[in-house]
Image (tube, rainbow, N blue to C red; front, side, top):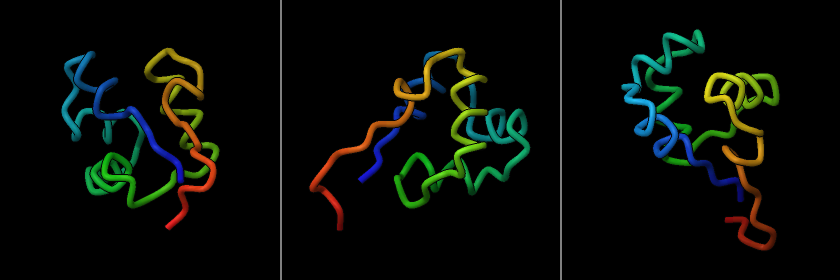
Length: 69
C-alpha cells in the first residue's frame, strides 16, 4: 500500500486543497482522493507534487510491503 504525507506537507506550507490542486493543474477532488489514499497518482504527478513541495519523492510517498487490501 502506498501512503503519502500530502496533508502534512500542504499544511506546513499553508496551502488549501484548492491551492494545491490549482498549482498542479488537477481537481480538488483529486487532492482529496490522494490525501485519503483512495487514489495513487501517476508517476508524473507524483514527481510534480514532490517538486512543488521541494522534497524528494520518498518524502511524500512511501510503500509498505505486505499491506495490500
